[in-house]
Image 1 (cartoon, rainbow, N blue to C red):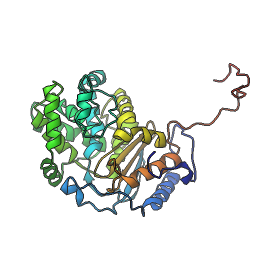
Image 2: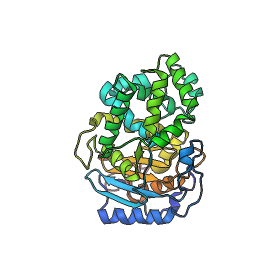
Image 3: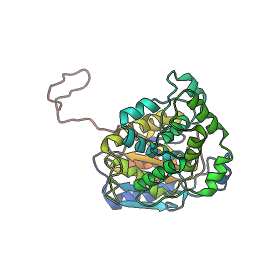
Image 4: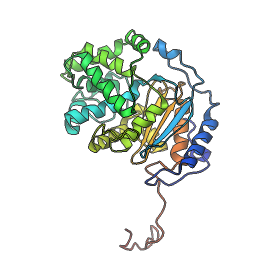
Length: 349
């Protein structure tokens, strides 16, 4: 299971309902969780991309955004960082909105690989050579399908789309982009392999470059919460009221997130937290509670799978304490159910 995420460590566990608790309660729980995990020192800051290695290991912030537009934050929620892999579900949503969900699923695949995010073996093991949009191979293929005849046009569509999700203009951090581009050989190889199998919609070198720019887009934990809340709100940004993508797209994106959002740890994440989520190597995590809102967290130290250590723990705490886990329920005692060995009346509903 995810490291140190035991239900016994959480003081209160609520059944999932169709709404968030009152604002004061959310802020109190957010503050409690922040204080609880801010002193955690486990994990290492990503260093394979030089620009990311300079991130502060002490940075820690989080935000909760509800579908009614409430935004609550704690700690370093306004500190900017590159979005990295957390961009994947939102770019996938843009492709689904333009190509159609079924066509996008056919072209990209939606099954979890059970392998690391940058796996080449996963492509070869899959007979159709499709991945899913949450791993690097599938994400590069997704980016290649973004509308636009040139790399610049595709990047602009992505910037406009992610800005609409965030409810404010976003931009690429050029320093991070340059740093990633200098260490991008594996992604370039993946793109050429996909192209050789006819699974790329654009020139492989240019598709990789657009994808690298995409990962270097700068956001905050609050931005992630607003972006996630847009998916939770049927594609309508809860702050601006703008329709970003259709409700049918949100449903499909969240389904893929549930199975593959945290790569080979996705099953453990769902087991513990019970919500669709997506992590990135800069230390960001977005977690979506459909119909309710979303959590955005930022803390650079990562575990061995590349997921924020503090981010996971705080998200688990918030999921349980705010009653967000989609799989939590209590027995119905007002009907005729008398136990597994007793009689079962037909009036259960």
